[in-house]
Image (cartoon, rainbow, N blue to C red):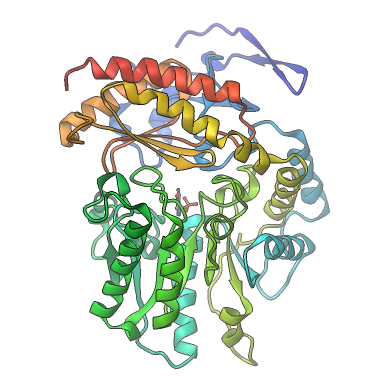
Amino acid sequence: MGDQVTLHETITDGITVTDEVHASHNYAERARRSLWLQMSRMGAYNEHNEVPIMVRGAGTRVYDANGTEYFDGLSGLFTNSLGHGRRDIAAAAAAQMEEMAFFPLWTYAHPKAIELAERLSSLAPGDLNRVFFTTGGGEANESAWKLARNYHKLRGDLDRYKVISRDVAYHGTTLGALTITSLEAYRTPFEPLVPGAVKVPALNFYRAEKHADDFQAFGVWQAHQIEEAILREGPDTIAAVFLEPVQNAGGCFVPPQSYWREVREICDRYGVLLVSDEVICAFGRIGAWFGGQKFDYVPDIITCAKGITAGYAPLGAMIVSDRIAEPFLHDDVSFLHGFTWSGHPVSCAVALKALEIIEDEGVIENVRANEGYFEAGLSTLKDIPIVGDVRGAGYFWGIELVKDQGTKDTWFGDDAERLLRGYVSPELFRRGLICRSDDRGDPVVQLAPPLISTRADIDFMVEVLREVFTGAAQLNI
Ligand SMILES: Cc1ncc(COP(=O)(O)O)c(C=O)c1O
């Protein structure tokens, strides 16, 4: 990178912002020397292949250190649902910092946590009305498994410690959450994990082995995989089932309506707690506040994070019903679990502002109004020979790439690597589209743009994908 300093102008909320272009700071080289990147192959970065340095965001766009603009097609990391650079959210954070930056929720409470708990209770489906805060999604899942175990113990169900989750699913990286996660590559380096993980098939209708011509019947069959697992393991050993409303890893697996109804009944039948991991799906991502409102179910515990603050501060939560809280509400009983930063006042103030904006500005309505347009645009890509499946909901879509549309033959290992890391990812980025190319399951490209994105933004994403997939189809991998 050169040393010269240039100025770059962009317009945010009608205000012209002039940035010093950051090329002179040599951030990439400094990052390479001192920063440990998360989930990244740090050895892949060198002077010819620099880590991208993002310096600023405005609306649906972000800007790198050279002043290059990108469309943020993954909302940061499924976080920035309201886009970047909102001064009203920044003001809410600043006001809270001035009033009281921090006080813990360990034996004390503060107004913003109380107001946010009430707000979440009013938005959540059914009787979910009590909130336990964490600082992120993995912690929320870790907490939910511990809560489920503790709940059963307090009720005299001493052997219920196991957890059921779906293949390919990602639920976080702390040891408990990693145990619930089903991605081999993420698990193997840290084994042995926590005892008691039971896996059931992912809900992949595109590659259905049973009921491939009947989505509803497929949903019932998938739910019965959970029942079979419960019976095989022994019902009185199962604490909880963890499922996302729409599963992210593997590429936006959407269930039919039959699925959640059936799963709810099965969990009730065997006294197993149903945890809906909505770390990605909640707060509008799939066109509803929560998965339960879209698929008509009431879980025992919702875990959420990311979009709760629209990405402006870290926060996670478990939302539970009084029924689950009840054994903990007696005399000297405590849920002996927590984190210093849980329910940080600044994060709670930010979350309250973000939820207010989602409601006042009709953000979920925007997602619903454009959901069909998004799907139709992506579906036009099916005329490219490597586009196998387009699936998703709301502003959360996955495109599965295949070698052959007829046989659904796919790429593995080095070939998948050449396709995604070698071509698709860098080409999308070069054309100004940030999204996710993922080979944790079969190769998929995923889009989760800010929920404020317009039809013009959708057109831009489809156009870039068309160029890149057309190029990829000619690679002959
Ligand atoms: C479904 C799901 N659950 C849990 C997590 C973990 O959240 P966090 O990274 O905040 O710990 C993620 C993160 O992407 C997720 O997608």
